[in-house]
Image (cartoon, rainbow, N blue to C red; front, side, top):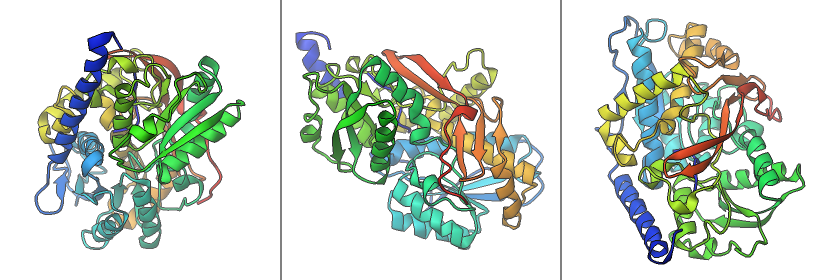
Length: 444
């Protein structure tokens, strides 16, 4: 799940809504505790389904963390990736080779991530490596693939800028826009609309610290600042001491929360309502409505969501988005165990798997261009990944996808929106992929 979307009545209603919100959250955490467990230590996806594939399969190893608050992210990884692989194989695979994905669960542990990645590469002989949720995991895996010379693509998560700004290497590619790439249009909007003084709650580890720096830099260009940084330990059970630090006296113009990891982001957004902070304070960067049982809580109405590369109905009259959503509805009906992590197939929204889907489609596009058939073609695949430039279409149904060959950091069309109702979002801005800022501070 990605950092996405956002949102008091009278007397009894004011008391009841936080209780309902916490019940929704409790049911979500219960679902997380019942994550589908593949047979043995891994699961596979990718059997051909009607296309003509006659070569040996191309093997993809996928680190899909499914523990605790990472469960929704793992669900999106499985659903989005499996949808892409299903479509690719049904159309004949990649150059006549079926894609075959092996999933493992490193439990959000960098040591396990490194060990499992090593096993996937050296024992299972995968041709490409994908996934890992926490920045601490993917930064370790990034250095490992440099040593073992295998292409690696994190998909969702791994949002620390440092992956591309400090530690870029020849074998690592990231298509998800992160940090400052996402924040330009969002920061411009919130400063112009609400003001220049902000509180920010962020996870006190690599991702959150990276987001704090990114917001600080972007706000600074507009004469604005984070006047009250609030670091939150990862998975902190008692949020009250942190949430109640946010002043409601007008001394800050709002609170930014999309420096929190996915599970913490959801819990904090609910706690803002529970302790009466929202809607008294403008909220920036809350979760999507799937984690609230399919409808935004009333106290988050008017909140501005974290930017994302997919928003249903955007761009208007987009048949490729319609086709993607049709496929999404089919895959969540088919893989009900993963859909149930979101509360059922009807609660699993298309954006939850889009970044994972688009990463696999971009990889497929590069594999086709490189005539890739296995690890022996890694150099050709690297060259093809560096040239990825996919317009809005079947492989990029949300908007264009591009890769910067300098640091291997990609870009996608970005949408900024706010919550306008229980199940409604209002588009505030869209940024084409070729206008998304580049880092260019690291050279592969």
